[in-house]
Length: 341
Ligand code: CP
Image 1 (cartoon, rainbow, N blue to C red):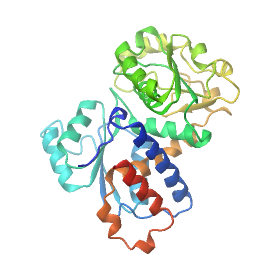
Image 2: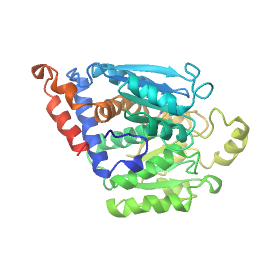
Image 3: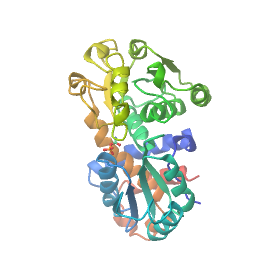
């Protein structure tokens, strides 16, 4: 039975911890040019129904680096949504490749693809719900710097509402699962709802993380080790642009003034793409406390781990020349086996 990576809710805290360890090992192996060909000749279909730079590139580079292939298919290239429904697309894709990463405006597409394709499916972002590969990368970026997660304070300023607050909500969820304290400030109109808070509070009680929501950005950032935000406006929501800019700016914009309210060691994260002058000022994103490009680079190491953990197959590496696998294979295979129970 294969596993999918489409929602952080479906991944246990233990599995997330093993994945983070795997990202660390992948990063070291990649930097030393010692990555084993653990996905030898396997193909990941990369179905992007929405544009992407980081997610697309990082998955394609990751597959190549592990000896496999990434096959990019963009919206309009196939019959999906016009002459073919997702069930047939999913079944045929599953017959022709070893795994699928999909980005769509609708989580339902991703869920349906995972139901019908008989291969692992990875969610490369659902515009209306979540971005789990990004959430894992962001937490890894914190983990590799801190060497721990429990007790680290992460602040988010921006939209946490259902259907829009993709990054804020996923970071809240993964933080609650892994013991990161999460403090977020959102305007009343775009605030996380009680039922979602109940869900994350359940995980937070187990991990010991503190989750606090407020309307006041200054309260959210006061003890922040890391501060992040997400786009206020984006493609497809042009009708709402003026209203959203008016609602979020200036109070919910990450500015140099707001960053000064955080401790001096606080680092700024952003999943990118960023709109300088909207959710964040140029002074912050280009400033000394910003680590956004390290974070973006970490997408690659995160995807290396996700591709191996979810698409890897024991028979592939057992059939490889064991002497050629190099010094990192054993660690990676052990982590794979821990993730797969
Ligand atoms: N952060 C992120 O998902 O970037 P892309 O949209 O470029 O993939």
